[in-house]
Image (cartoon, rainbow, N blue to C red; front, top):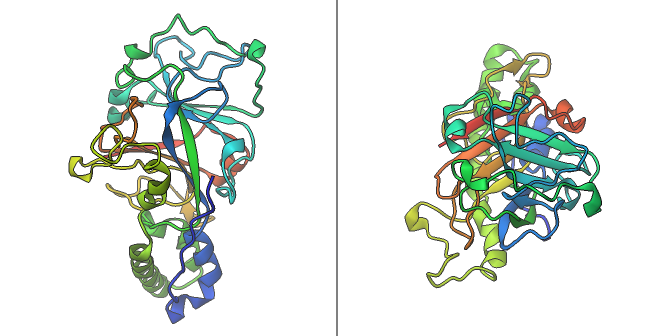
Length: 316
């Protein structure tokens, strides 16, 4: 795990100086970025992409819904104790978070059953307490999982405290700063803030750059599997836990607004899964698709480890 990425902020315009502390805290809030290593996961409870899930023997099977109508596979598993410091805001310090999907087509279509979360407050390493036999299921029966290894791919983490930022709908999380101002002044302040954030974001190196020293050591840089090829439209995947988004390709999906707080109801980025990249010799779910899967959550729910109400957006 590396040291957090740091980047200086340009001086704020005079009108925004009273809000300097809140703006800086937002733009440089911690995020945890992760990519798959070129190796299989070894332990059931470690962070990984794909494969069979960590599953206590007394827990409900997450591979089937309650009615047995829809089959799911593990998209992502995050052992929150592995997340490096400084940690993303409001993210629980311990436990295991899992995301399951029934296949790529369901995600594109925005089906009601397109994803499900599972959270375990405690993680056991005792194999006697875990399900080890998944022979009743076939990973390849679901679209985009056919070549995924059953162990899943191990992850490496990179802490970042600076990132390009897209404020999104109505100024997103910072709109509340100006809620007590008259309408005309509020609009002007938001415009100045949007311009400042755009200028600031142009100075922040791409997230991909933070990965290259680590990844080039394990992936061949000479045209063999693992080469990062921008000509193919792919690259190092920008998977992200917490923090802020560098861009909304199709607009901010968080249109439901909380007037009391002046923020979107789902005001925190929980996860961004970047479904692109060719940085591994093994297949991982949805790689090769030029898209991102975005998951937003309310900060109170996140702090309370309640993942029952998550907003999903397929961004292509």
